[in-house]
Length: 370
Length: 123
Image (cartoon, rainbow over all chains, first blue to last red; front, side, top):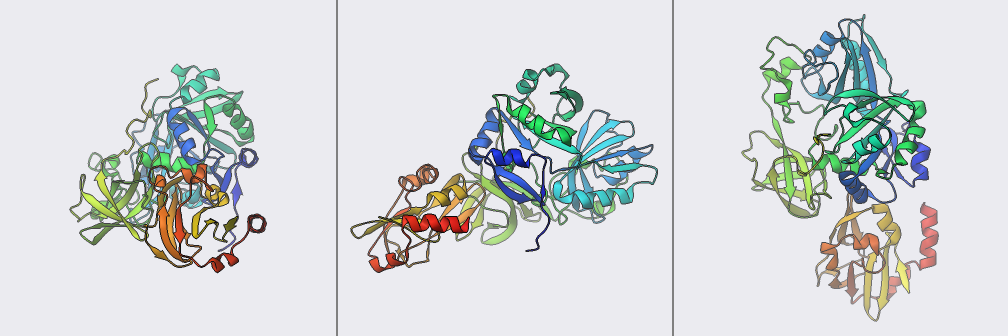
């Protein structure tokens, strides 16, 4: 193993004082769980409000006349018709149409954008985006001076209300707004990675410790680590870069084709489009509900009639479902589809599952009206 | 007397039957246990054989047999309540019983004091 440098978020000491178990993730030293453990934290987020330290993720600012057109050519989903105030899930592709990163683009103003990217792809994303921007457009990597905390769970709006925020002023689903919380200006979006009502908060990294402690002072709120973040997102079928999305697969393989609106915008061009249009998807991403509690992990074979037809990309026991679940890529020429039985390899054992619709967990509060 | 292995299994011997489980340290390290694959009653096992698997949310770990003998009982409660391994690792969360082993095999095991020292060395 090469001794890579490992970064700490501004909240490192807070995690340690809470008794967190720290693990390396995408080059960062991150809390995988606190003292109550992954299942209790997962359940708390489904029922109350969870606070996640997401300071490791990257944030970029892009602005200048022509930024709208430039970003529309860089990202796979349309940016040109994205209203100010809206956040849009999007993809950065390589020339082969494969996914370099999944990210969220915030349109702040006519020609001003905020882009939130994965921690592990931050530097390659920055290079890729900068290389395609005209010189007159400003690109700034603001990750180091930006704190990101996610407040997620059905009671998250009540917490903000208790903190003096008018709930009517909070942004609607996949929209952003600006609030002041505990005296600190915040860019807030109603987005998240849990399948629950929730918000992502961006603010001055120097205020990270104060904000963390302030939000934890509300009785509904508990700190939740990356372990539960992973089971929460898996239960609702959200992709994790490096698992469901990577530079071996296109957004079409992953089932995001309709989002790209390629047929609706025949004259629109973006990086990777030519390769996407010329190819037909080699894979299809499938959701598999297992019969028992035992999990099939990433890398396990997906088998039908003793033939390997695919590979698991994520798998774990799903606490809110009560059984294990998995996602994985199946060869698109395989006839296997919704309702079909598959077998999954798990060490010496073979597990049985059924290809199913997403989400696995259907009772999330993510679209709850406020 | 309770014995411990370097693989973090514990053994309690009563007569010619050894009860086996994973140590509190191991249970804490694994985190929330979601599934336990148990051996079958009647299985003949040799030291170092895989006795079963404990799965947590994040990982799966093999349980290695600390003794050679025959599996004479398994803790079927773990099928529905794998969390017993977290809640009571060295009592209600036992994994299985082995009989017919050679008691000289216990000579290589650690006492509770020696195991506590071992834990300090590896942490």
